[in-house]
Image (cartoon, rainbow over all chains, first blue to last red; front, side):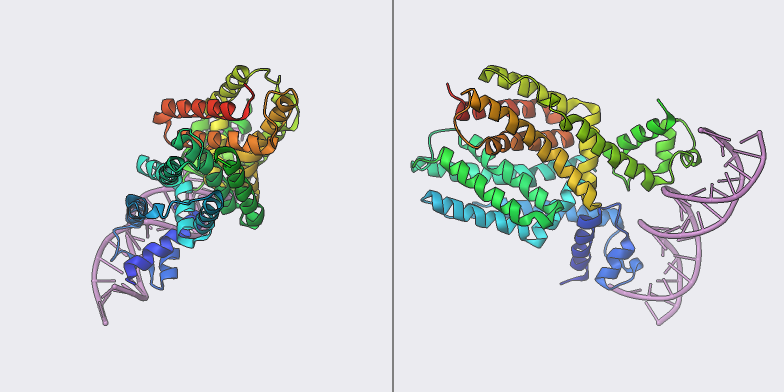
Length: 195
Length: 195
DNA sequence: GTCTATATCCAGATAGAC
DNA sequence: GTCTATCTGGATATAGAC
């Protein structure tokens, strides 16, 4: 891995923990294993690192949600739906990189319009569109009752997003949070899926 | 209003816009109309101001959600339920003080455990408990179908919380966001209330 | 309780040798 | 590309007069 990428990685870690303003270039350099002035051979300055991270967050979003691949195989029963959804939730919740991006964005969302827009995309639009597609397909197969798939997708994902955010700030509550998420998903299926 | 309170007010405004680390004591002083060193006659230092704001946020929570008063009159029809809920949503979304506290907390939630806990209380527990009570009462009166009131309260409030957070970071989208909220609430009533 | 002057510190950034 | 040495500005905070 290039030094440039190492810098970005450590910067993201630190920004997600202490925020952009709470992180010094010297801290970043130390984690990378170089001295602060050496950073400036790779980036114009601290803000340049920030912008590169924002670019990465956008690219990552495009990469994941840009293709149809992330939707995966459409579940054929409510149990399968619950299983794949829980799996996705747990992965998203625990994956270190995704978690860092989430914590970074939530703290820096007010810094400028671009960060605000990316936060909305990462937090809401991505999953919502994904589940709109999935529920749409499953409705066509008669697994869901007839309703607006986009509305249902929002009902499903809003709670999950909120509870994952809670787990980010209170990781000691992870167990009860994952239980809540599962209860919510099961309830969602009880209400909107055909028996 | 005492200078001390003015300081807290301006500090909250600035922290909510630029974060704690992004705000200087000099900026706070300037908004108050004094010089920075004068601040130190009222507070030990910048962190002391932060702690006073956290105390205020806790007190505010207790004051509002501590009594039963905030629940208000229990609605007697779905239209009334939608009306009072929308009114509450719009108030919460637009009230400058509540908005500042929300933006402040969301940015500083990772600073320490106390801030994390307060953020969860403000963002989730308060409204959820409130709507659990309301839905409970309305279920007893036969207005809601038989279901777990706490689960329903979460279904109702999660989306609202998430969309208000979106409006905080993208205020230019307020109109479409309030429309989404109303659609969500109406859908919620369609699904869970008796005709 | 407010001011001016100032101490102290530290962060981001640059110069230039290797 | 990395280092040491250094500049510069900005930020918190204190001292002491009024």
